[in-house]
Length: 243
Image (tube, rainbow, N blue to C red; front, side, top):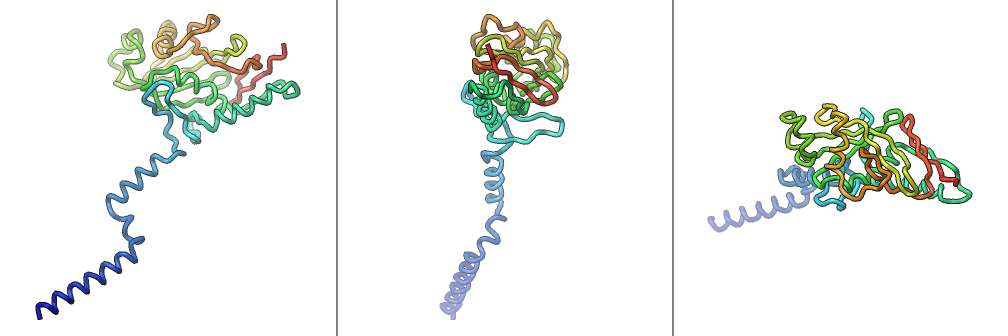
């Protein structure tokens, strides 16, 4: 009887195993470790809206796409930068248009990608917004990278990392050269005194500074055939250099 009982138990186990295997699609995803794996894969997908987290200067890549937030901030995206680059090719043609009006988000992705590479490697979460004739750029930065002049003024208001928001205008300063001239900075939602803006720019931006660059300017390389740029109502218009 003992032998028959053990044989019966073995048959029951084999039947249960077969049933479990055949119905695995119904219960495997409910396992705790499977849920964790699925959520991790979803949050790291290529189209995710998390932006610009790099470990070394110059090594960052933009996300493919990202949605504009309700308050108008548009994360910088590689798709937007590519669209702007393709559109600019039309201005290079002798028979092409003399100006192009593009989405502010696309142009911001195109020009600010260069500024991103000038920023400290700890900087992330870049986004842009167009306000009338101004462009706003924001990011999260390590407080230690802001420079002693800034941290000395704001002092204990600052944590280890803070959101930094810069507002300014785009200006062509020479053939193949433009600048983002910063005239307003807010850190921890506190407006930075005007006298400190230039010092902040020099603390957070690396690389050569052209002679024509304003003390508050961040340099941007542009095609030499662009002669002027205007910002208005969420759009940016680029004009061909007809000289």
